[in-house]
Length: 468
Image (tube, rainbow, N blue to C red; front, side, top):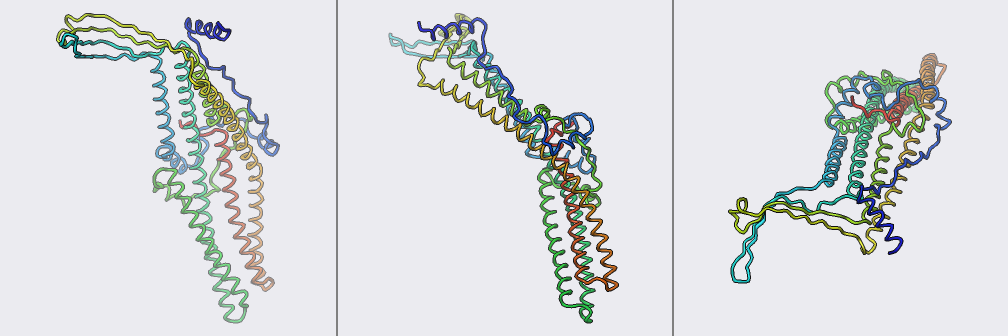
């Protein structure tokens, strides 16, 4: 007997006595990211107020706007992508039930009958009835248990995937709603500007007719008017696209009461709380997408155990108990009672390398899962770092844009006074109008970016998974 054969027999004997598991000991890989956020976001992160982990902050507490509350609740109830994610949980739960059932024998009620010719020219009848257990695997080497552990990890991963889908949906609804508010503000601004420029054109046309203005002034006024008209059309299109996107997220048309309140709501009314960034290592427990990747890693690890167990004997048991008779009418009266017991042991001797290939495939799948797990951590780290960098700079940009808008407003007022008194040309006046309109548009867009970045930070830190 070879050394390898003795080792296999020794391991088999141990397994037969108490059962064993071939699943390798699982160790969570080290997070391949820095221990601190990048320097660009360190100051902001350190100034964040002490608070509970963002993952524990319910979306109802983060978003205070009543219309946004209603929209998020509608989306959670009707969004089809989230519905599919929840149904995937039910499907993987059923798959786990199948693997758990494989650990127990299946007992069937069986009734058989046969009529066969005998050697004397007659017919021999044979009838039997009883309970039958067919090919129940005695899981001494943990193959079935490993498959059950794999199915359990897949269920947990699917559940975390549903939480990720919920977080993404809440964030998408909030950001799209903010975009719709910005669209309304830009439309109101463009309509007001268009009306002002129509009046300016009439004034310039009147002055041109009386020879007080040149054709250059007239063409400049016409150009500004058409530019405002083109901007209005562009913003009307963007608003329609944003509403269509929101309707898709909601899974139904925009509620009538929300549509009614929409023109009166402003981005300046939206207040979102500051969030503590914490440490990069916190993401391992906060982010459901990272937990999902970890459970997929656990599942791949369990699959290695099933592949290892395939190298060892597979012991199955077929058993039955019941009655047999040559007459169907006497089957349960005068039939003879008995039982059968037929264990079977299959030891793979030659399979053309199939088991070895399955084990190699399982190990490679585990290595792939490790890489995917590490990539999910790195992606999460980058998303949070980007959001923190945005929080650092967008607040400064918003403050500067507000100051510029105030300056452009004052510039137009002073230029208008100078123009009325003949101290400034119409070109100066037109230029001040154009600059103020551009500054007003930029202010709305920067304010939108700042609020959407706050929503993105809430999402990337794992907030919004708890629906309460």
